[in-house]
Image 1 (cartoon, rainbow, N blue to C red):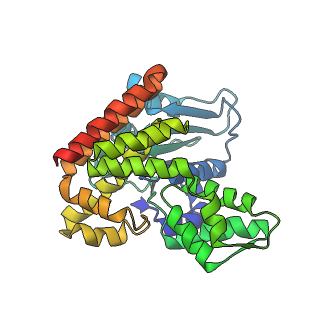
Image 2: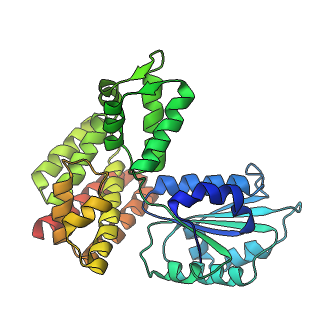
Length: 344
């Protein structure tokens, strides 16, 4: 099994990635999944600006034509040379897993395949089929721990010539970490805000990171998990008034349920209480939000969490397909989730 742990990725990218043709990257941190897929794509040597060499597919494309991956992998490029098939939005589709298993048995010589997937449970079909293969590099992407966040902060700040105080660093770590790309963008925003100074201090972090809209989104998600419909409607009113996209709340809510899903599995498999799993998988959550999530873990079963994730994902798809009804679909879905929390 070629599973690449988070701390092994940089070394893998430099030394071993060239030995693989197929990569499956999954996890709850969608930004990190995307970032690592992009890094691997850059190492393939395929011209990413050449539409004849790079084939980007959404999982919906494969759903409509379930043999397309095998067809594309077996096709000879119009102008020769290596090509890259880049698939996004995968989950646990059997036709994808079967195609990858077929390709792993006879890896294509001139084709690289990158699959970006959502958070996959241990024992899920896709993981069960790709993890035993020595021809597939499997790369899980979970939320950055303190070590990874400190490294990210150091890289971004050192390039600007700035320094950061310990208090400012701690405040920054508490406000980032759920999504790699979002975290990187927040640090870059802080650096831009502090250009012309020598030192980043704590008040600079609180001034520029975690603006009102982000706080409102967190307020809405917390109200949903608490089952507090009045607080939810109040938070949504603030979000709409500030012109913040309602879609961000659906996305934030889905991320919380994905995190809860990982935590619930850990609790059930190891038979540990919610407080203990919060100390590991939930250590980057702001301390004010931890009691809400801990209570939700006690009331939502693994099966109920899975059903709710599917419903939220379906709502996101509907908002993309019916943009004119985006706010209505989002509000109805989120209010329904709030009421489900209240019943529990």
